[in-house]
Length: 146
Image (cartoon, rainbow, N blue to C red; front, side, top):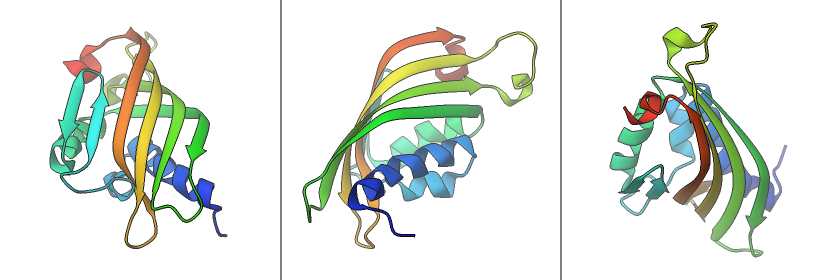
């Protein structure tokens, strides 16, 4: 099955999110521009460079997460090697030992994503700039920030 150009752009975000939620760093990494040019802005962080960004996300791979992404809007000109997308994200984070606890020990955030992408040499789209504007949070912030 071949993806349309807009679906191929959105697929970068889908690979990143599925990689996070399935604890698959390889899939997550396939969605990212793995150079010093990559930029992450969100949650009080402003991080430049793939290695530094990877360290931040490595913490998420120690948790149980669910990210629900909606309202994806892709801005792509025909034949372009750069694209832009926006999306809404609802993200749930919990420590593995609390995944089935009766009491709520999670950390939830609602965010708007603003993402700049580039087409990789192999043709797959990769995230170059990922900005997450957090709209609200609930729960135990120490799960992520502690």
